Image (tube, rainbow, N blue to C red; front, side, top):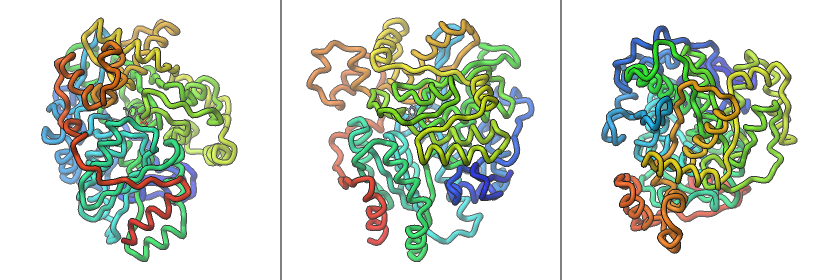
Length: 496
Ligand SMILES: *Cc1c(COP(=O)(O)O)cnc(C)c1O
């Protein structure tokens, strides 16, 4: 399988090259040149998560041997890194309604599903392509990617990792997880601004020829651990298959019975993996895109107009506070049959913050996707009601999914069995979860770290090891920069 850029001016390249580069030099994202299909997925009904992962990943990584793919899978998905042998277990909330729990990895959010395996892909990819430069991973994070990438890449030989996070845009737990990160090859920098500032800053540096030349002389090369890297996206396809196969195994659905997935969405990476799973033959009826008040995707899916010219809203689901959803570019490239219209739309997005797709493309989007959004009050109410009704504590992002699923049912009457993708542990966003589940006096004046214990006492769930004692660890990273200073910060770190 080969990969080409969505901007049409680069490629084809092998999977190793695409993963090593992260983003294409023409500013586009890598996509497979040809569709992949999985014959008879039901043969994997009784397989483990690891076996399913090998079967799904191999056709995308044809320049990796079977043994190499297996090695990557085994190193990533095991019970040292994950707290359950199921890796991505399904929880049955109600008849026909399931939660796919993607937060059993070391950092308690779904980013671990990809970032535990990406460093292994990247290491093999650099070996295969005869690369001798040290790979510098640049990450912009809305909170969860940063920590997951730091955990995945810490002390991986031949790599350095630098994470940029919005100073005011992450929770206390998220921030602490990052600024206390240990490892000889890690840097963490706060940016004054929001996630979009951090992300566009990083994207600009990737395509800045003078920076690249300066680094090449010093023996460094950039790559990305954001979901613009194909190596981030492809492992996410696995859990859509795995959820379906678990439903089949447990007798919840019949042969070829289609299901819906509800996906709390920000950068459009998670839900795009669902799109690829469907293209590969997985029976998915609808992909329901759940947004928060930053509902640029909801408007796009309904109207075909993408317009980021609106106020950025800080919400209690901060990992979805995004106005530029990078992976939409891949979807549009696939839906237009790899057409250069996409380059024009992306240029319009860059110059004016807005583009409108043609009617055929808009129709194709709306046929497969459906979208609505939840505000913070709806999110809190849903966490509370779900706990009262089922005794299940949901995190804020997952709760956005549940609100939107309710709106979908009401609007369409579609009773197809549904999986809500649960993207974070409730402990990770414990302040909001506590506000939903406890009375004000209990929550008021407490730190997030005290609330962890209180929540644990209430629910009987144990505090995940990755979140314990975070307040007692020393702060190792305290640099804060303006967006324009990101480039200098990188050069300063690498020139040390
Ligand atoms: C990253 C993240 C999301 C959004 O996923 P995208 O792939 O960016 O759409 C949702 N929830 C949580 C908890 C996340 O960390």
